[in-house]
Length: 250
Length: 221
Image (cartoon, rainbow over all chains, first blue to last red; front, side, top):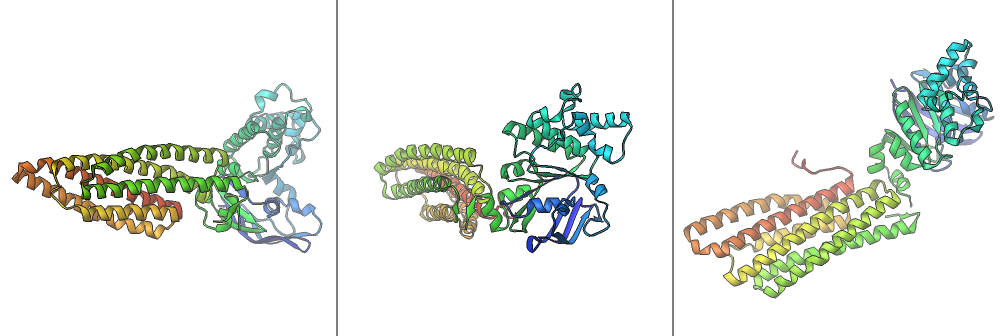
């Protein structure tokens, strides 16, 4: 079963149509990248999948979007449950001004886990999953804002995986990091994909080429082309994709 | 082709294309001169061909460096990536054709001393020259249809090679005195056959460059 599937998805900010008839299937436990110029709709599309756009007044979606077969567009959707299944990592590391422990255990706590030993286990597992346990196991009470940028972003990924989501949405997760930290986050993504379906939005085409197995190119609200990353970067079938990834203009 | 946002990149790609074009035309001239030197029994022209090889080798090195620099600096993708990586391969084929032309020219010098070749290879030479010209212009013009046209001649050249070599062996067996001209002639036939193979490689690489589909080793399937 596809982790995410869209049929004829349209999205509007008031009168402005940001997404036009998107049809897409994101395969489970793979890394899928969305590329395209600024304003093409890729972050909007990403935020449809955990209904983050609901926070914007006047926005609306039409069409069909399913997460593992369950429709998520329309009323009557348990958004807390949806966002537990579909975690998100943002462009800039945004840990809460709390301790490392409280950050990593935040999600499970608001979803009802209260037993200290359970939370300790979850914190250890999630920090371990992002390669931070060794560094931080003796500093769990340290304020997360004192960590380095890379550690903060890893902690945010740990916070996202702590609720054991099925899908991780990543919106430009490395844009605030240096090349070495970026390489380590990319390596982490490869490690995480055996347990999670990852959908990443990136402006960095080389990053999309390095980390993803499937890739979609978006332009002005259209999903112009979607396919295997190898194919997209060596022999795209649409001229608009070719022009974008080779840096040309018509 | 549409322009790149960075005009330096466009200029670097254009310069690469011009260098490959220059190398290809030098090699084409070398092969044409070989055929002419054989026909005219021209030792001076044969010597000039051997000299030309130096500039072909220098171009191979320069083009390799240009391709590596483009890959390292710009991380090209799609059509540009296919052009540059195929360019790297095509210069190897061109350099080897240059080497074969040098060998051809050496055999011409021997034949000028020993006498005319016992078989007429002018038709075969004309076909091979056309294959080389067509494959290279297909690459430069990005014409995959023209590249496909090269393939049909490859089998024809293979058949001619077999026929000529068998004929030369038979004639030397009957008339051992012909060996002095038959051996160099036989080598020239082999060189032409290998030049045709390189032209076929260039045509295959051109098709990949244009269509993004590798047709090597599977054309007949």
